[in-house]
Image (cartoon, rainbow, N blue to C red; front, side, top):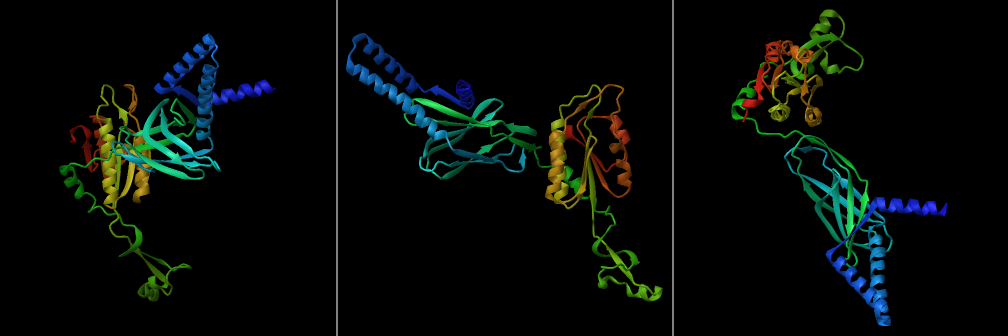
Amino acid sequence: MRFTRVREFFRWFYRYRSLRLTPEGMRFLLLTLAVGMAALNTGNNLLYLLLAMLLSLIVMSGILSEQCLRHLTIRRRIPDNIFANRPAAVTVSIMNRKPRLPSFSLRVLDIVEGKAVDRGIHLLHLPAGASAAQSYPVLFTRRGQHRIEGLKLQTRFPFGLFIKAANLPLSSEIMVYPELRPLAEGLLHDLAVLGYDQAVARRGPGVGLHNLREYQHGDDSRTIHWKTTARQSRLIVRETETEDIRQVTLALPTTVPAGRSTEFFEQAVSLMASLAAYFQRQGFAVRSLVGEHEVPHGFGQAHLYRILHALALCEPVETKPLDETVGEGLRRLGDRTAGGEVTIVVMPWPDPAVEAACQGVSRFVLAWVQP
């Protein structure tokens, strides 16, 4: 039982610890080996004492470096919203939970795809009970789900002979949204006039009359329409109409027709994300249709991030010649336009079937002709 526990300890230790020599450490080991051979050949007690001192330095180096890596709490803070090709700052905080002993010469590296990536985080001294935080920039060039698999903590303390590292399973999932690009001047001019003459009449705060109905318990007495109340001999209240509610649906086909290239798909995804951000700033109720994945109408920054999340995960879908390339959601866009809604289809490739099914939409935006 005792040997089993010792074996399990060494398995755990070598799983989460690694050790490699520095150039100085290699020279020190060669010197130690030379002194040891000279002591054995000559039997000189002074050489034996020197050998014992050199070996004790190696042992002390292992003990002290291990002490530096123990009882440390590390956290990684990642921004909530990260966009492709836009720098973001990630913060790593380290807390020394040892009651008396400090830690020295700490270097923090991220583990990405099995490789250690140096972020330039280096702490020379972390006192007992203290904490420190450092930030570093990250830049993701592609949208989608990214993962930092873990974290590696290194130290050269005390003599710089070895680099001892502790591998920590501190994984982080990062969602990278599509790149937001400035829209072309010509496209902005066309979008500026869309939707202002297509307001949807809805009940809400405003000055226009939306409806008259019978009074219900809890209604504001100031909304009573006295003329109608006197005429019908019962309490009637008025409901007002919200002012200038504008709706837009942005659609992105993801089904690739047979023989078509997906060269401009990433550009189309970025373009649709930029359009969603534009309409959100303009106060539209934005709805997205990415393939057959729908995000209903909504307002505000949180709703925009839901649309960007769907765009971050979308991929082009290859189809066979007999497969249906136009979904039901795209076919109904013309009806929404007739009902007073702005409908825009972002085309990542030429597709006559989509163009024929979406007749009546407000606008087609072609990704391959956008700057």
